[in-house]
Amino acid sequence: VGFTNIDDSGQVGLELSFNDWLSGKDGLRHVLRNRRANVVRYVSADQEVRQGQDLRLSIDLRLQYLTYRALKEAVTRARAAGGSAVLVDASNGEVIALAAQPAFNPNDISTRQPEKVRNRAVTDLMEPGSPIKPFTVATAIDLGLIGPETLIDTSPGRMNIQGHVISDMRNYGEIDVSKVIAKSSNLGAAKIALIMEPSALRDRLALLGLGQPTAIGFPGEEDGFLPSYETWRDMDRAALSYGYNLNITTIQLAQAYSVFANEGLFQPLTLLSEGVTPKPVRVFKKETVRKVLPMLRAATEEGGTARRAQIPLYHVGGKTGTTMKYADGSYASRRYISSFVGLAPIANPRFVMAISIDDPRSQQYFGGQVAAPVFANVMDDVMRIYDIQPDKLDQSMLARRFD
Image 1 (tube, rainbow, N blue to C red):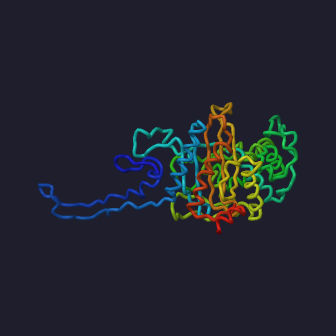
Image 2: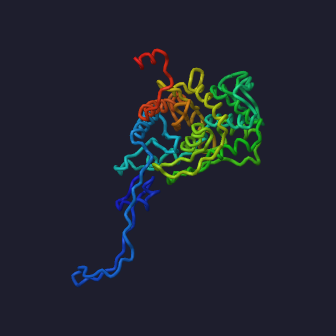
Image 3: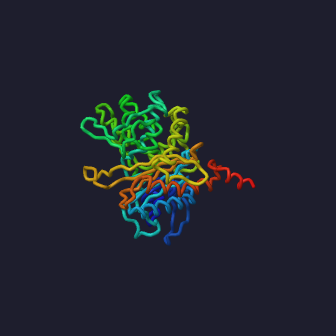
């Protein structure tokens, strides 16, 4: 939200963005006064008073608190430098929670240090890593080049492209496209990207708003970076397929994943309740999204990288990311950006949440270990608060439910 100065003028956040709308405008009137400065006659009213307008945000205070609390716990537990989380109602593009750590109290001037005042969800850039892989797969499916059962040979777990080595956590051998997502195979994503035209994936990512400012109007929002493809080598295409070679914000990641909740339509986000948003743009076919959603679900289940994203009574889906942190002109040793972006309920997604943890220093630093639990903690409450029908009931639960 931000804060105002002593004159009630917005200084940061939405208080600054909508300062003119909120503050109104003083009127101007010419008057005639006597020697004692008392008004004896109104001469003219040159400018009428304009009252400040109300601004209704899309933020749900209940979920804002729950997101703030879960993110703070995760950042503290991971001994991280910071973090951010964005929760979206994909049915209308409204941002219903937007949290960052470290945070500040707008009523306490002593907490307004620059590193606390900035909202990292919109100001901090990152290479997202593996959350880009589902877009790589979706693009190739959309073009008719692969299907969920298409086999990709990732042996022996390493591949040299133009002097650069791409590797997986282990040798997964020959796996189908669904397992490329579940196992988060860099080699699988790279091989899929290399069968497409250089512009194919890049153009889809642009349609998803990656590397571009959103329409929320938050001051200080970073654009990010999505490179042009004209001079790309094979290594550039491969790196993009698994989330390197571009810079985005956490809110851009949440916005992009909303396409999987809207049957392939890209819906720009808004921070205003009942705000006017641009008309959605189709990025993927409905049939493509229906094929990708089960892959995202598999990533959160046994054998996937995001098992800690699971919540009781509901099937969810999503993708983890753990990327090397770029600092001072090179990739820093053992420093990471860890992330998770997920959807719930996965059978009919309505809510999207993206979480980024900056520089976790604990022994557990993977996105599935430090970011996915934030999703689980918050999304469990989202389902309850919004009264979403459970879709993961076994027979014993059903018997108790209807007794």
